[in-house]
Image (cartoon, rainbow, N blue to C red):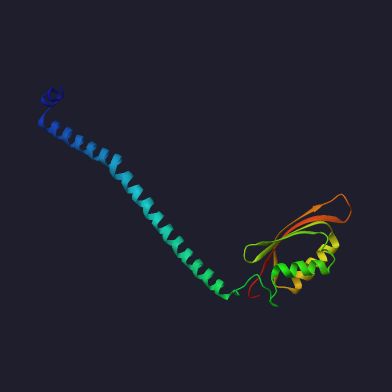
Length: 166
């Protein structure tokens, strides 16, 4: 059937049909193969650029972490006077009259301590915490304070960290 159609056409029409078929074939190859590959290559190239930027940032961050670690004292759980953070917290709480409400003192990693107070007078607790933070090289990492039914009493969960080199 195709040969009959071509045989009925003049040589000039056959040439135009052959060129059109070739052009359509080239467009199909371009649309189905070349263009998707080119888009994928462009996307991969952009991804490589992003990954290289991320790598540079991570390397700079790594160097900063190394520098900061070298600045820290070797025993972060110790304060300036050489006592452990656990000992200081326990001793100062008892001196402030909070020893009876201090239910738990536990280490939290190398540099921290977790505390739990129950039925502690809020004003007394805040005064102790302010005195502790101002006199020692300690920072609050997290805190949760819950009201109790009794006026002025709270339950407290507190996480403290020793700060090196400050």
